[in-house]
Amino acid sequence: MSKMLRRREIVVELLKGRGDLLVVAGLGAPAWDITHAGDHALNFPLWGAMGGAAMLGLGVALAQPKKKVLVVTGDGEMLMALGALATIAVQRPRNLYVVVLDNEHYGETGQQATHTGLGVDLAGMAKAAGFARAFKVRTQADVARLKKRIYSGEGALFAQVKVDPEKLPLVLPPRDGAYLKNRFRVALLGPDSLQQ
Image 1: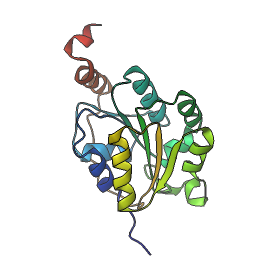
Image 2 (image 1 turned 135 degrees about the horizontal axis):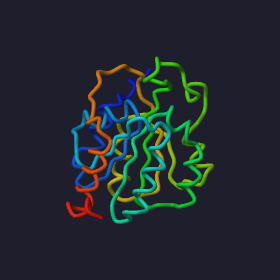
Image 3 (image 1 turned 60 degrees about the vertical axis):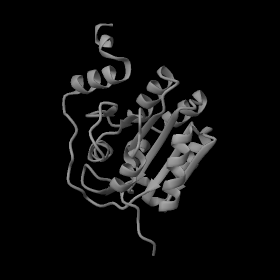
Image 4 (image 1 turned 180 degrees about the horizontal axis):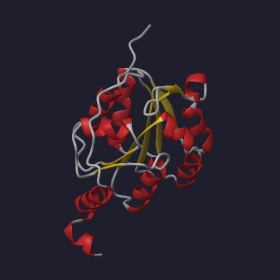
């Protein structure tokens, strides 16, 4: 049996040398994972908005077409927002990359099994919705290819990354939603954007 990918190692690798990459992270572990990789003004971790990461990422990508937008979310959250796949596929934003860290569990509520552990194929659903680039990531070589695709600008892209369901210590981003919004806005649009 091959060694399973570890979520935090994947996120660190994807964000290494990120430049001005905009990152939206889903509720729970994805937010902790991007923070573990380094708290950054261009990170927008969601607090209390399960199911919203992909659609928020789409909005940012459409508003900022010259910037790359990476959504890092979990399988539980993506299952909750399957309609987002159709909306993103119809919009076809060339600057949006959706990465689902699929541990086949609802990690924040007690490790209950999700549907992906029972055979539901999120990458297949994304492809059926209309994503030209939708695939599963299972090896380190796949991770390297995924990173290359993100940074070379091959969007819209959907990747279902199969990861170990390990329980990791929390690395919490700031908890103040207004602060996170304003920090992200200023980093993206400059200090005068708060007056608009």
